[in-house]
Image 1 (cartoon, rainbow, N blue to C red):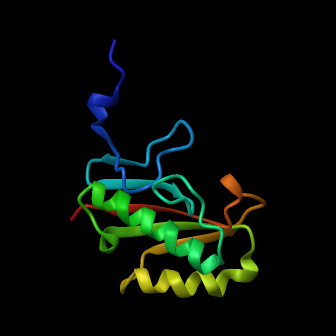
Image 2 (cartoon, rainbow, N blue to C red):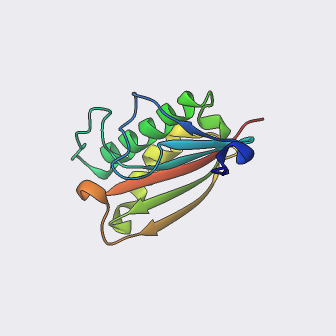
Length: 133
């Protein structure tokens, strides 16, 4: 009996330069020309949480996204869509200032949503979808 993974060509993206998954998920998944980066919280690769400002937490989230992308042979320029989860949209401008420095035109499509809580008490989490060209 087949598990279906080989037919779908789903390849996990694993890197020691980003925090390891804290649940039953992969840091990223490569399938065809797409790479899906799981939500990255402001955990350092050693698993400790950046507890500073929303700007500092956003920077760590985006650093983690980049490390997973690099593990798949891609860069931030490959990102076509992100979702930003925040516990306080009142700090949107602070997050957005850091976010804008990590991407360039054309910026990825994005959704930003407020949530009641994030893992480990984080204020920000970011996931991404990238494409191999």
